[in-house]
Length: 276
Image (cartoon, rainbow, N blue to C red):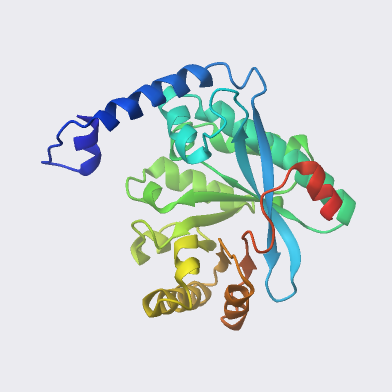
């Protein structure tokens, strides 16, 4: 039933044993996730973001990791949707935000530079009417302004957007919090969506960067994305950079910010301090 629902309306699916295996794994992960926050099984790692023109670190993206002895191979793409289904994503999301902002305050003090922290916010979290208030409280807790934070949202969230969502995003921008559209080009991106929301940055998905300079279509699309974003006064981040040729080409395009294993993998907070 769920397989058919995921495939869209008016569809049917034949049973396969792999479905049972997937469901059993999901059920086991769900059981392990219960109480995982209280057991301190989550931690945050940070991937540096580099300004391409100067090759300097201008901020970081906070990424959650789960330390569980039974599911050492479970990654965020797998366990975050389960956290959302369980109704735990709000608490875990605030855990990530609190840790991330405490560290960016520390690193700003060390460097005396206006470093910025990017944090992914789940669509489920936007259902909480107190989301913006909670974010403000954590910023105040660490004596940070909104300039220190960038909220990353996915394109899909704009499809079923409510008045409340738009109001929350507007409140964030009024508080100088940046709003970035993550995985740009992979979902339901439309100029009508972009122009109706206070977005000021896009992140080009790694799938386009990976094929850039190999595939003419992808190369043209990256060109178009950067040009479009700049015409709208957006900043552009390219994620998933894995070689010097990709970075060099993005520099030619005057892309603003770069992320990827070629520059740095996600690292723990102590390694960031050493890096700075």
